[in-house]
Length: 388
Ligand code: ATP
Ligand code: MG
Image (cartoon, rainbow, N blue to C red; front, top):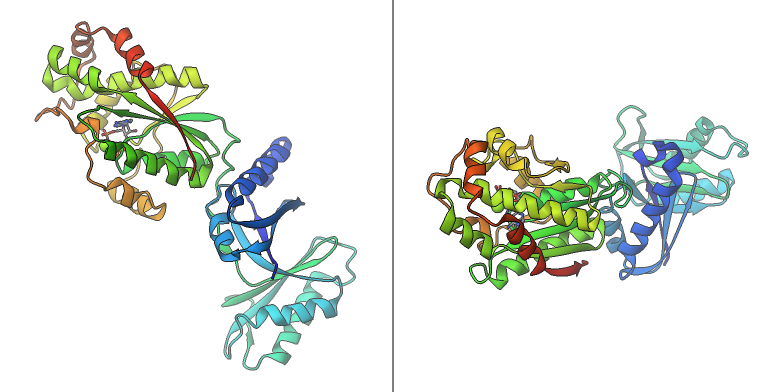
Protein backbone atom coordinates (compact mmCIF):
# COMPACT_ATOMS: atom_id res chain seq x y z
CA UNK A 1 0.00 0.00 0.00
CA UNK A 2 1.21 3.49 -0.84
CA UNK A 3 1.64 6.06 1.89
CA UNK A 4 1.79 9.76 1.19
CA UNK A 5 3.44 12.21 3.58
CA UNK A 6 2.86 15.92 3.46
CA UNK A 7 5.81 17.89 4.81
CA UNK A 8 5.59 21.40 6.22
CA UNK A 9 8.45 23.79 6.58
CA UNK A 10 8.22 27.08 8.34
CA UNK A 11 11.08 29.54 8.24
CA UNK A 12 12.24 28.63 4.81
CA UNK A 13 8.98 29.83 3.34
CA UNK A 14 9.93 33.32 4.49
CA UNK A 15 13.27 33.70 2.84
CA UNK A 16 12.18 35.53 -0.32
CA UNK A 17 14.67 35.17 -3.12
CA UNK A 18 16.54 32.34 -1.47
CA UNK A 19 13.45 30.26 -1.30
CA UNK A 20 14.14 28.05 -4.32
CA UNK A 21 17.63 27.32 -3.06
CA UNK A 22 16.27 26.41 0.36
CA UNK A 23 13.59 24.19 -1.09
CA UNK A 24 15.99 22.39 -3.40
CA UNK A 25 18.40 21.81 -0.54
CA UNK A 26 15.60 20.35 1.57
CA UNK A 27 14.52 18.07 -1.30
CA UNK A 28 18.08 16.81 -1.70
CA UNK A 29 18.46 16.27 2.04
CA UNK A 30 15.22 14.28 2.12
CA UNK A 31 16.33 12.17 -0.85
CA UNK A 32 19.63 11.43 0.78
CA UNK A 33 18.09 10.59 4.12
CA UNK A 34 15.64 8.14 2.60
CA UNK A 35 17.86 6.60 -0.01
CA UNK A 36 18.32 3.20 1.66
CA UNK A 37 15.04 3.10 3.47
CA UNK A 38 12.25 2.74 0.94
CA UNK A 39 11.20 3.41 -2.62
CA UNK A 40 9.95 6.95 -2.58
CA UNK A 41 8.85 9.65 -4.93
CA UNK A 42 9.65 13.12 -3.68
CA UNK A 43 8.08 16.23 -5.16
CA UNK A 44 7.04 19.70 -4.16
CA UNK A 45 4.29 22.18 -4.86
CA UNK A 46 3.57 25.58 -3.29
CA UNK A 47 5.55 25.50 -0.02
CA UNK A 48 4.82 21.84 0.57
CA UNK A 49 6.95 18.80 -0.01
CA UNK A 50 5.45 15.39 -0.56
CA UNK A 51 7.02 12.01 -0.06
CA UNK A 52 5.18 9.09 -1.56
CA UNK A 53 6.37 5.76 -0.23
CA UNK A 54 5.65 3.26 -2.98
CA UNK A 55 7.37 0.34 -1.31
CA UNK A 56 8.97 -0.15 2.09
CA UNK A 57 8.49 0.73 5.73
CA UNK A 58 6.41 3.92 5.91
CA UNK A 59 6.81 4.20 9.67
CA UNK A 60 10.58 4.20 9.36
CA UNK A 61 10.28 6.87 6.70
CA UNK A 62 8.19 9.03 9.03
CA UNK A 63 10.74 8.65 11.80
CA UNK A 64 13.56 9.63 9.46
CA UNK A 65 11.66 12.68 8.18
CA UNK A 66 11.26 13.84 11.76
CA UNK A 67 15.05 14.14 12.01
CA UNK A 68 15.60 16.36 8.98
CA UNK A 69 16.32 20.01 9.74
CA UNK A 70 13.96 22.43 8.04
CA UNK A 71 10.95 20.16 8.54
CA UNK A 72 8.40 21.54 10.99
CA UNK A 73 5.91 18.72 10.80
CA UNK A 74 4.93 15.67 8.81
CA UNK A 75 1.47 14.26 8.20
CA UNK A 76 0.49 11.01 6.58
CA UNK A 77 -2.33 12.13 4.28
CA UNK A 78 -5.17 10.56 2.34
CA UNK A 79 -6.06 11.94 -1.08
CA UNK A 80 -9.54 12.76 -2.30
CA UNK A 81 -10.90 13.97 -5.63
CA UNK A 82 -12.17 17.52 -5.76
CA UNK A 83 -15.81 17.05 -4.81
CA UNK A 84 -17.55 17.38 -1.49
CA UNK A 85 -18.76 13.75 -1.63
CA UNK A 86 -15.28 12.42 -2.29
CA UNK A 87 -13.87 14.51 0.55
CA UNK A 88 -16.57 13.29 2.94
CA UNK A 89 -15.91 9.66 1.99
CA UNK A 90 -12.18 9.90 2.54
CA UNK A 91 -12.68 11.93 5.73
CA UNK A 92 -14.78 9.13 7.11
CA UNK A 93 -12.08 6.55 6.49
CA UNK A 94 -9.36 8.75 7.94
CA UNK A 95 -11.34 9.70 11.00
CA UNK A 96 -12.05 6.04 11.77
CA UNK A 97 -8.42 5.88 12.95
CA UNK A 98 -9.12 8.22 15.87
CA UNK A 99 -12.87 8.22 16.45
CA UNK A 100 -14.29 7.07 19.80
CA UNK A 101 -17.44 7.94 21.76
CA UNK A 102 -17.10 11.24 23.59
CA UNK A 103 -14.24 12.53 21.42
CA UNK A 104 -14.23 16.32 21.04
CA UNK A 105 -13.22 17.25 17.51
CA UNK A 106 -13.24 19.86 14.83
CA UNK A 107 -12.71 20.00 11.09
CA UNK A 108 -10.24 22.52 9.78
CA UNK A 109 -10.38 23.34 6.07
CA UNK A 110 -7.86 25.27 4.02
CA UNK A 111 -8.88 26.13 0.50
CA UNK A 112 -5.75 27.02 -1.49
CA UNK A 113 -7.65 26.27 -4.70
CA UNK A 114 -10.18 29.07 -5.05
CA UNK A 115 -11.82 27.28 -7.99
CA UNK A 116 -13.35 24.86 -5.55
CA UNK A 117 -17.02 25.95 -5.31
CA UNK A 118 -17.55 25.84 -1.53
CA UNK A 119 -15.88 28.20 0.94
CA UNK A 120 -13.76 26.54 3.59
CA UNK A 121 -16.20 27.17 6.47
CA UNK A 122 -18.90 25.36 4.59
CA UNK A 123 -16.65 22.42 3.77
CA UNK A 124 -15.75 22.12 7.46
CA UNK A 125 -19.40 22.23 8.48
CA UNK A 126 -20.48 19.63 5.92
CA UNK A 127 -17.64 17.25 6.60
CA UNK A 128 -18.20 17.68 10.37
CA UNK A 129 -21.89 16.87 9.99
CA UNK A 130 -21.00 13.79 7.95
CA UNK A 131 -18.69 12.53 10.70
CA UNK A 132 -21.29 13.21 13.41
CA UNK A 133 -23.83 11.21 11.44
CA UNK A 134 -21.54 8.22 11.00
CA UNK A 135 -19.75 7.93 14.34
CA UNK A 136 -21.79 7.85 17.52
CA UNK A 137 -20.98 10.03 20.53
CA UNK A 138 -18.66 12.58 18.87
CA UNK A 139 -18.82 16.18 20.02
CA UNK A 140 -17.81 19.27 18.10
CA UNK A 141 -15.44 21.55 20.01
CA UNK A 142 -13.78 24.27 17.98
CA UNK A 143 -11.90 25.78 20.93
CA UNK A 144 -10.26 22.82 22.63
CA UNK A 145 -10.59 19.84 20.34
CA UNK A 146 -8.88 16.56 21.18
CA UNK A 147 -8.72 15.65 17.51
CA UNK A 148 -8.58 17.76 14.36
CA UNK A 149 -9.40 16.55 10.90
CA UNK A 150 -7.57 18.73 8.40
CA UNK A 151 -8.77 19.18 4.85
CA UNK A 152 -6.46 20.95 2.41
CA UNK A 153 -7.99 21.71 -0.93
CA UNK A 154 -5.27 22.12 -3.54
CA UNK A 155 -5.09 22.37 -7.33
CA UNK A 156 -5.61 18.76 -8.24
CA UNK A 157 -6.68 17.02 -5.06
CA UNK A 158 -7.74 17.45 -1.52
CA UNK A 159 -5.52 16.14 1.29
CA UNK A 160 -7.08 14.84 4.45
CA UNK A 161 -5.32 13.99 7.67
CA UNK A 162 -5.58 13.76 11.42
CA UNK A 163 -1.96 13.40 12.46
CA UNK A 164 0.91 15.88 12.77
CA UNK A 165 4.30 14.46 13.67
CA UNK A 166 6.70 17.08 14.92
CA UNK A 167 9.93 17.70 13.00
CA UNK A 168 13.05 19.38 14.39
CA UNK A 169 12.43 22.74 12.67
CA UNK A 170 15.43 24.92 11.85
CA UNK A 171 16.95 25.31 8.39
CA UNK A 172 18.00 22.64 5.90
CA UNK A 173 21.66 21.72 6.30
CA UNK A 174 23.60 23.22 3.43
CA UNK A 175 22.01 26.66 3.23
CA UNK A 176 24.31 28.44 5.69
CA UNK A 177 27.90 27.61 4.76
CA UNK A 178 30.38 25.36 6.50
CA UNK A 179 31.66 25.30 10.08
CA UNK A 180 34.43 23.30 11.71
CA UNK A 181 33.29 21.50 14.85
CA UNK A 182 35.90 20.75 17.50
CA UNK A 183 34.58 17.37 18.47
CA UNK A 184 35.79 15.70 21.64
CA UNK A 185 34.40 12.42 22.87
CA UNK A 186 32.42 14.27 25.53
CA UNK A 187 28.77 15.13 25.99
CA UNK A 188 28.85 18.77 24.96
CA UNK A 189 30.50 19.14 21.58
CA UNK A 190 28.14 16.76 19.72
CA UNK A 191 25.22 18.80 21.05
CA UNK A 192 26.94 21.99 19.86
CA UNK A 193 27.31 20.37 16.44
CA UNK A 194 23.65 19.42 16.40
CA UNK A 195 22.50 22.95 17.23
CA UNK A 196 24.74 24.47 14.57
CA UNK A 197 23.45 22.07 11.93
CA UNK A 198 19.98 23.08 12.97
CA UNK A 199 20.75 26.55 11.63
CA UNK A 200 21.62 25.12 8.22
CA UNK A 201 25.39 24.84 8.68
CA UNK A 202 27.29 21.98 7.05
CA UNK A 203 29.78 20.42 9.47
CA UNK A 204 33.33 19.37 9.09
CA UNK A 205 34.75 17.87 12.33
CA UNK A 206 38.15 17.93 13.98
CA UNK A 207 39.19 15.61 16.78
CA UNK A 208 42.52 15.59 18.58
CA UNK A 209 43.85 12.34 19.87
CA UNK A 210 47.08 11.29 21.47
CA UNK A 211 48.03 7.78 20.46
CA UNK A 212 49.30 5.65 22.10
CA UNK A 213 47.96 7.35 25.26
CA UNK A 214 44.45 7.43 23.84
CA UNK A 215 42.98 4.16 22.58
CA UNK A 216 41.41 2.92 19.37
CA UNK A 217 38.18 2.72 21.33
CA UNK A 218 38.28 6.46 21.99
CA UNK A 219 38.63 6.99 18.26
CA UNK A 220 35.72 4.64 17.52
CA UNK A 221 33.61 6.66 19.91
CA UNK A 222 34.23 9.87 18.00
CA UNK A 223 33.46 8.12 14.72
CA UNK A 224 30.18 6.89 16.20
CA UNK A 225 29.32 10.40 17.38
CA UNK A 226 29.94 11.70 13.87
CA UNK A 227 27.75 8.99 12.44
CA UNK A 228 24.95 9.99 14.77
CA UNK A 229 25.34 13.65 13.78
CA UNK A 230 25.43 12.67 10.11
CA UNK A 231 21.95 11.23 10.49
CA UNK A 232 20.73 14.79 11.02
CA UNK A 233 22.87 16.63 8.53
CA UNK A 234 24.37 14.26 5.99
CA UNK A 235 27.94 13.21 5.45
CA UNK A 236 30.62 14.66 7.76
CA UNK A 237 34.32 14.76 7.02
CA UNK A 238 36.22 13.95 10.22
CA UNK A 239 39.84 14.97 10.68
CA UNK A 240 41.74 13.05 13.35
CA UNK A 241 44.73 15.18 14.25
CA UNK A 242 47.68 14.12 16.40
CA UNK A 243 48.12 15.83 19.71
CA UNK A 244 50.71 13.53 21.27
CA UNK A 245 53.74 15.55 20.32
CA UNK A 246 52.16 18.81 21.44
CA UNK A 247 51.20 17.45 24.82
CA UNK A 248 54.65 15.98 25.31
CA UNK A 249 56.28 19.30 24.45
CA UNK A 250 53.96 21.24 26.72
CA UNK A 251 54.67 18.93 29.58
CA UNK A 252 58.40 19.20 29.15
CA UNK A 253 58.67 22.90 28.47
CA UNK A 254 55.83 24.88 30.04
CA UNK A 255 54.41 25.45 33.55
CA UNK A 256 51.95 22.78 34.58
CA UNK A 257 49.24 25.14 35.74
CA UNK A 258 48.98 26.68 32.28
CA UNK A 259 48.65 23.30 30.60
CA UNK A 260 44.93 23.56 29.86
CA UNK A 261 45.16 27.08 28.45
CA UNK A 262 48.16 26.25 26.32
CA UNK A 263 46.59 23.04 25.05
CA UNK A 264 43.48 24.86 24.03
CA UNK A 265 45.40 27.62 22.30
CA UNK A 266 47.17 24.94 20.27
CA UNK A 267 43.85 23.32 19.40
CA UNK A 268 42.44 26.63 18.21
CA UNK A 269 45.51 27.41 16.12
CA UNK A 270 45.31 24.05 14.40
CA UNK A 271 41.55 24.35 13.96
CA UNK A 272 41.89 27.77 12.38
CA UNK A 273 44.50 26.46 9.95
CA UNK A 274 42.25 23.57 8.99
CA UNK A 275 39.24 25.87 8.64
CA UNK A 276 41.18 27.99 6.17
CA UNK A 277 42.18 24.90 4.24
CA UNK A 278 38.67 23.48 4.05
CA UNK A 279 36.66 26.65 3.55
CA UNK A 280 34.99 26.58 6.97
CA UNK A 281 33.83 30.04 8.05
CA UNK A 282 33.73 29.52 11.81
CA UNK A 283 34.90 27.20 14.57
CA UNK A 284 32.31 25.54 16.78
CA UNK A 285 32.93 24.30 20.31
CA UNK A 286 30.91 22.71 23.09
CA UNK A 287 31.96 25.28 25.65
CA UNK A 288 29.47 26.76 28.03
CA UNK A 289 30.16 29.45 30.58
CA UNK A 290 31.72 28.70 33.93
CA UNK A 291 31.61 24.94 33.60
CA UNK A 292 35.31 24.25 34.06
CA UNK A 293 38.61 26.14 34.42
CA UNK A 294 39.04 26.73 30.71
CA UNK A 295 35.50 28.04 30.33
CA UNK A 296 35.67 31.20 32.39
CA UNK A 297 35.46 34.49 30.51
CA UNK A 298 39.09 35.15 31.38
CA UNK A 299 40.21 31.81 29.93
CA UNK A 300 38.15 32.18 26.80
CA UNK A 301 39.57 35.60 26.27
CA UNK A 302 43.14 34.36 26.44
CA UNK A 303 42.45 31.24 24.41
CA UNK A 304 40.50 32.82 21.60
CA UNK A 305 43.15 35.42 20.85
CA UNK A 306 45.02 32.94 18.69
CA UNK A 307 42.17 32.85 16.17
CA UNK A 308 40.84 35.45 13.79
CA UNK A 309 37.73 33.66 12.57
CA UNK A 310 34.51 33.56 14.61
CA UNK A 311 34.17 30.91 17.30
CA UNK A 312 30.58 29.79 17.78
CA UNK A 313 29.56 28.40 21.16
CA UNK A 314 25.94 27.35 20.81
CA UNK A 315 25.81 25.97 24.38
CA UNK A 316 27.04 29.15 26.02
CA UNK A 317 23.91 29.78 28.09
CA UNK A 318 22.98 26.20 28.86
CA UNK A 319 23.36 24.31 32.13
CA UNK A 320 24.95 20.90 32.15
CA UNK A 321 21.56 19.33 32.86
CA UNK A 322 19.95 21.01 29.86
CA UNK A 323 22.82 19.88 27.66
CA UNK A 324 22.49 16.31 28.91
CA UNK A 325 18.76 16.28 28.28
CA UNK A 326 19.30 17.38 24.71
CA UNK A 327 22.15 14.87 24.27
CA UNK A 328 19.73 12.15 25.30
CA UNK A 329 17.08 13.35 22.93
CA UNK A 330 19.43 13.35 19.96
CA UNK A 331 20.89 10.01 21.06
CA UNK A 332 24.51 11.07 21.34
CA UNK A 333 24.49 10.66 25.12
CA UNK A 334 24.97 6.87 25.31
CA UNK A 335 27.96 7.17 22.97
CA UNK A 336 29.46 10.10 24.88
CA UNK A 337 29.41 8.32 28.21
CA UNK A 338 31.46 5.35 27.03
CA UNK A 339 34.43 5.42 29.38
CA UNK A 340 37.41 5.88 27.04
CA UNK A 341 39.80 8.69 27.86
CA UNK A 342 40.29 11.61 25.51
CA UNK A 343 43.51 13.53 25.19
CA UNK A 344 42.41 16.44 27.37
CA UNK A 345 42.22 14.30 30.47
CA UNK A 346 45.87 13.28 30.12
CA UNK A 347 48.48 15.09 32.15
CA UNK A 348 45.95 17.37 33.74
CA UNK A 349 47.27 19.58 36.53
CA UNK A 350 45.65 19.41 39.95
CA UNK A 351 45.20 23.17 40.05
CA UNK A 352 44.69 24.62 36.59
CA UNK A 353 44.73 28.41 36.31
CA UNK A 354 41.19 29.73 36.10
CA UNK A 355 42.39 33.27 35.35
CA UNK A 356 45.39 32.85 33.08
CA UNK A 357 47.09 36.10 32.13
CA UNK A 358 47.81 36.67 28.48
CA UNK A 359 51.31 37.92 29.12
CA UNK A 360 52.24 34.84 31.16
CA UNK A 361 50.81 32.58 28.54
CA UNK A 362 52.64 34.26 25.71
CA UNK A 363 55.84 34.13 27.72
CA UNK A 364 55.43 30.41 28.29
CA UNK A 365 54.82 29.79 24.59
CA UNK A 366 58.22 31.21 23.70
CA UNK A 367 59.63 27.81 24.65
CA UNK A 368 57.66 26.15 21.85
CA UNK A 369 58.11 25.75 18.10
CA UNK A 370 54.52 26.63 17.46
CA UNK A 371 54.50 26.63 13.68
CA UNK A 372 56.20 23.25 13.46
CA UNK A 373 53.81 21.76 16.02
CA UNK A 374 50.74 23.04 14.16
CA UNK A 375 51.99 21.78 10.81
CA UNK A 376 53.06 18.45 12.29
CA UNK A 377 49.70 17.78 13.88
CA UNK A 378 47.85 18.43 10.62
CA UNK A 379 50.31 16.53 8.48
CA UNK A 380 49.87 13.36 10.45
CA UNK A 381 46.11 13.59 10.45
CA UNK A 382 43.76 10.95 9.21
CA UNK A 383 40.67 12.02 7.25
CA UNK A 384 37.47 9.96 7.24
CA UNK A 385 34.18 10.49 5.45
CA UNK A 386 31.41 9.52 7.80
CA UNK A 387 27.82 8.81 6.91
CA UNK A 388 25.18 7.13 8.99
P1 ATP B 1 32.90 18.15 25.79
O1 ATP B 1 31.82 17.51 26.59
O2 ATP B 1 32.47 18.59 24.43
O3 ATP B 1 34.15 17.33 25.78
P2 ATP B 1 33.85 19.62 28.04
O4 ATP B 1 32.76 20.11 28.91
O5 ATP B 1 34.55 18.37 28.39
O6 ATP B 1 33.25 19.51 26.55
P3 ATP B 1 36.42 20.88 27.58
O7 ATP B 1 37.14 19.62 27.78
O8 ATP B 1 36.89 22.12 28.23
O9 ATP B 1 34.88 20.82 27.93
O10 ATP B 1 36.36 21.16 26.04
C1 ATP B 1 35.71 22.27 25.54
C2 ATP B 1 35.54 22.14 24.05
O11 ATP B 1 36.81 22.01 23.40
C3 ATP B 1 34.81 20.88 23.68
O12 ATP B 1 33.42 21.05 23.76
C4 ATP B 1 35.27 20.69 22.24
O13 ATP B 1 34.59 21.56 21.36
C5 ATP B 1 36.73 21.12 22.33
N1 ATP B 1 37.59 19.93 22.57
C6 ATP B 1 37.98 19.43 23.76
N2 ATP B 1 38.74 18.33 23.60
C7 ATP B 1 38.82 18.11 22.28
C8 ATP B 1 39.46 17.11 21.46
N3 ATP B 1 40.15 16.10 21.98
N4 ATP B 1 39.33 17.21 20.12
C9 ATP B 1 38.62 18.23 19.57
N5 ATP B 1 38.01 19.19 20.29
C10 ATP B 1 38.10 19.14 21.62
MG1 MG C 1 35.57 17.01 27.24
